[in-house]
Image 1 (tube, one colour):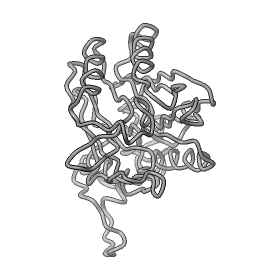
Image 2 (cartoon, helix red, strand yellow):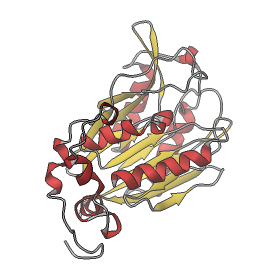
Image 3 (cartoon, rainbow, N blue to C red):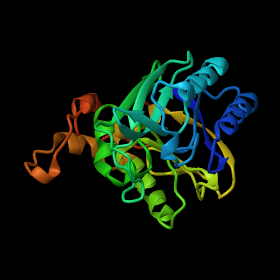
Image 4 (cartoon, rainbow, N blue to C red):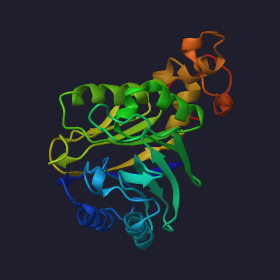
Length: 285
């Protein structure tokens, strides 16, 4: 069995500098749940939605975050912060491994326009590997509203999507539905972590690979540790969601020729095997 423990933190963030808050919460998670291997926070947690706090990456804030990952020996996805690069500003989420090395940075592909004015969209989806565990995808908030972004990560081999969000608007109910649909249609874990307090409405949602809600937070601060089971993802993709539809195999094998149905490369789905009858959902491997 391939399992991995992730703590999703719904922080009561203020509108300014929350770096000390994040640091304290990392320490709290490690002390309370020493078996956790990754900690995930909400979008723009560090400084809030302040473009004037944009800084180059690598930079001093990212170095502080890397020090936390190294000190506690954990994977850290600290939400995102505004990055300044080549005269532009990006909404960027770093991925830091337990040695304190930044192994990936995802630039939000779809800034929340017209509200996120002055922010440039990123140019590509992001996946990264946790050795001995599996491949993760990383997207940020509004990216989820464009299902092509999630499907592209899945076709690149992602089995778990980590998704920092920052939502304080009436569309949160729709985002909960999108998170469930994204998990179910791609047979992946989808971990959507919002903030609360001044910045967000909370209601983070953690979804399993059959669209099942593992946990839905309320509106207050919460630490949500879960253990994801990569074998469950692989079994569901191979044998069918709830023992029924083998969605990714059908997507991989389609012969449709339609410019509106552009498909990313699906070679990473080849090892799912042929589209067939599968096995009952509770059958042993």
